[in-house]
Image 1: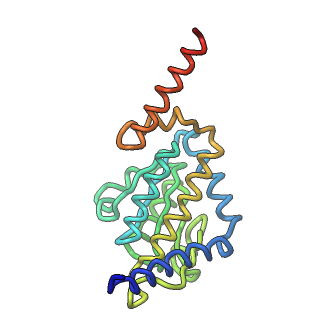
Image 2: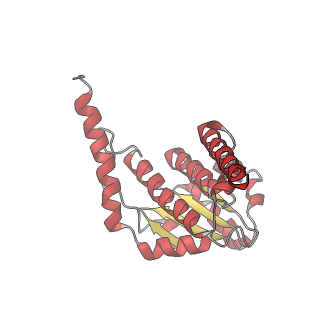
Image 3: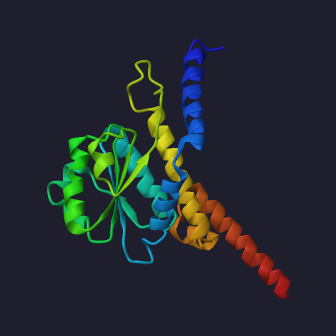
Length: 214
């Protein structure tokens, strides 16, 4: 037994408990609306832009990557770059996903008037119903987390884990419904262990096919 075990177990229990609760608390109607919208992005020649600050920013980076893996063209637009010309990336018909636990972060709410002017759809991800983001987003997606895992119950920790899990559920549901194949995954994910396993599997399939033809 390590002297750190009690702390480690407590933190892990907080995080998995928070995620488990989401099964019952997430608004499935809003999730369906988001999935339906994101399924149209590629076919309409549009893109997804994510943004957030601090830990919410790290979450936004990960969500953009997960959506790319599922063939939903996405990228993270850093708030510090957006006000220095980066907002030019936002165009009519794009989807802008803004992450802010409290929903009032100025660097994040800065995106709202630009999106309005340019005709982009705003998805606001927060847990504060009274926030600017909740009130002004086209789609308000509430992800409620009651307990963070740091000792002060303040640092975005369990909430970050939960946000990533929820958006994995969205991204990989899209993968289920957009005709995605393993060949598609191999085309865009040639590197790392995943690429190695996919290439090996693809090679075996070709060999088996050649054996069947002989």
